[in-house]
Image (cartoon, rainbow, N blue to C red):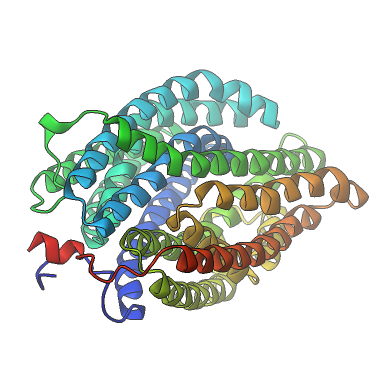
Length: 472
């Protein structure tokens, strides 16, 4: 691989340093995105409109429910492009790149239409009412209007990630994220807007991402080069992307469905505890947003597990997948412990950025979620890596089934059977770490079985050239 290339040669040499090299820029990218999302809520709170933070917080599960069925195919893009690179198939790599971007635009358009019409009924069904419902509906309708930009941006980032370049998206998202924050402040503080202002800023930033990422990919000299004349759907590439991406999309959608049920339960607790107020949902929204920083940090290692495993699977190097697993589990465990420690140590000053009125009930809610969810966060990190390895091995459906049974079904049963025995807030949150631990153990066990089966069935293919070597 050329020394000046930003693409990592995953198939040869020591792996631990390369996992770090891959994951750290991606981690920084994800953390910056979370920082900008946090800025949305913080700036919305600066508008002085009551319930602005809580209203945005109540939209998360619903937005993800609609987006995830389509954005899951970005995982399919990552897997398919990385696998084709591992196989040394330049033509298939190009076809999967161009097919995925056309699919992204179509999915984004469908998502926009669904979101525009379905947002208010779903939010109302979840329990939003009064001014919180009006603010949440306004935010989601503007957000979904920009869904095509968001979809194409995610797929472009997946392509960069599949070829081992996580630095370029970091640089670009840093710039557009700063644009997002600047537009937030302009719309809210200068134009006196509220949740609508931060939603418009998000749409503008996502559009800028598409333009800049697209230009950079058009100038790429490798197999993933974007050529507008090649933008078409190729049947073989589409089938592979759907095969590997649909289970991830269904999993994300059903995860969001279980989170919507939990969100609805929390809204019910809020309405019963402080009728007409939003202290509980404000505190939950603040803690959830901060918890997201730990999630995206560990999720970067999940992406590494998917990409490294996919390339090795394509190259038939199954023995090295064992090393990939050890490296990814070590890195994600380290990241999870450090992230949890930072959030727990600095919980009060961090939460005060969101809960600016000093509401005791809001702070109590946030602390409760922190104590129960953050301390055992390494179990979620292990669950993600195990899932990523299985997806990289081409077992996306199996990974989805395990995740759905271990997390979604378990949480649904918990809310309907266990929570009524003691209907308090901490019982809702307790469902998370228990489901993470169960699913993590199952993912690890099954991924080991699948890898060993592949080692028996397929001979080691040491003569497959890497992407870097082929490009030279």
